[in-house]
Image 1 (cartoon, rainbow, N blue to C red):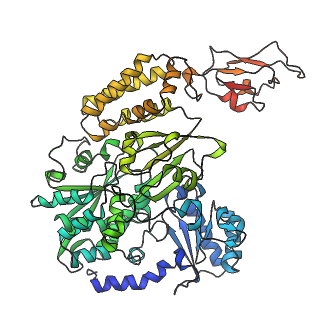
Image 2 (image 1 turned 135 degrees about the horizontal axis):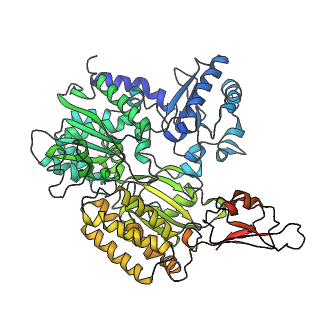
Image 3 (image 1 turned 120 degrees about the vertical axis):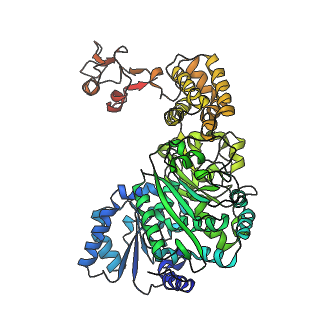
Length: 635
């Protein structure tokens, strides 16, 4: 088919706008011209793994059985954010938020809600059910403090339908840039907006584009980093699964701005749903002529291809990523020259991560001041965090920069489960640091996090409670870095291994106070001498835990004790003879046959108690887990 014109693009937007906005909270009570009810079912990785595909199949059968197929539309969307309650299903126009939906619930929901108009309150997210009726989910603790910009379409549109994206003003930013703005205007808009890269370093996006535009060459490239290797991070994956066209549009805008005609999205192969939807989006954009030659009749040419990564963490570093796209081993290159001068295939290139791209079209459409009005003076806009660990509401949150860690944990996150106390939060993944409970009121922005020894990173936020050992946490992240080091430079290849060896020694009860000094000295050397940003930041988890939790290191070294009872080398399991009734359950489940009978029978009991042979015990904890009388404890 021929490329669509500007008039045709706007016609699609006009036709689809009310249809898509029917699913917005502000449109509750309004009607869609085509369907009486829209059912949005989460099709992100989390809910898909929990069976949302089967829910859709069950819905289709029940709708057919109740003659509702022509009245109800099912939309498979991206992630809604509140992953702890998946699978999620939202019914519009009421905005009813059904959580932890199972196939068994579907017949009742269809009959009672969709047919009779009475929401099934026992299946709804409990925070939305009040004495005065059902409230919108945007009024709940999890959503009320969020401001969705990068995630604005996730959970709202079908990511596999380009018309639905256009219905949310999709590709109108590209039209505006091609018809109303010069490349310099785009750069100035980004500079005025103050947007900084969301991939970790926080470099000003407009400045990066300005540098690349300044270099003349016969070919330039635009790259998207969708590798996302941090443990516990899934921000970029969720954007790609829920709103892939926003990345394509933003990259095309960048191509026009710096003078590039080719883009590449580097996405890890472990993201099959994201890869599939990206390819569908690229094919649809090409079919409409929104990628390719003569886009919107303006003469502008730009195309995008996918490149799949094998999961190497180092390929999240920009020069290593570009080397991998070239078909070579993914290793970082010394800088300068920077990619803006010599990047992909030694040509001027820019690289931004998925979340950065997701902000660009909205900045173009709404203006620099709109974006700059959110956040703080030096950290503008919003930031997406993957909230995980010891937290009630695990999931994806997007908050204005400057929101405090306390607000994220206690209000949005719902607090620490099981009555435990908050101990620390890790931001920035293996490149970040641990924030102790004493700094829970720290604003979540670039400069505030750096000031306390952590960093924003790409947006992973792991919450820890009193049962976590901070020495073990530092060891976990360092093990990851050692495994993922590309090995090109000695400080990272050898230095991180030496750090891990010292941490192993400490957690086994063999450490000395001199080892703590060695840790700090080695960390500072690696930071100063590693080739790339990943090696330079690898010591951060160790340095931050030494800074804020040194007493735990001292306990491991001096007292030969793990205060949290985590490090196996320092654990000792004991039986309280007076609590033990001699049932033998622990003996039957012990994999090492380390539990033996004693001659002692506790008062009031009939069977002899048991004891643990320390020479045989492998410290697995199975005995303690199986004891119903809490007679076994660890020290």
